[in-house]
Every structure is written in C-alpha cells, then in structure tokens.
Length: 59
Image (cartoon, rainbow, N blue to C red):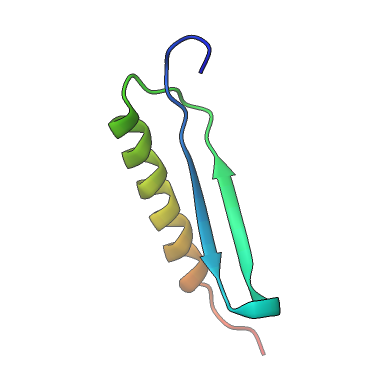
C-alpha cells in the first residue's frame, strides 16, 4: 500500500469448467507485515468456506 502497510485478499475457487466460480475478497484492515496480511486472509477465507458449507439445504 502507498503508506508501506500490507493489504489482505483471498480467492476461493470451486467447481469445474463452466460451472466454476471464484469468490475474491479484499479486506479493509492494513497490516505491518506480509505474514500478518496472509494469515488474516487465510483465516477469513476459511471462515467463509465454513459458513458456506454449513448452510442447510432447502428443498
């Protein structure tokens, strides 16, 4: 980032071929190190996946 901080983003892909999707999430917090930004993105991405896979299926 222009101020020397690091931003975090994560991409979560699923599916195959024409049925594939890719969710890209960019986060507001700024981080002092690349490692801190990476960890935040990984944690948030995993939480998003857990929420998506725990939704009840409506018939």
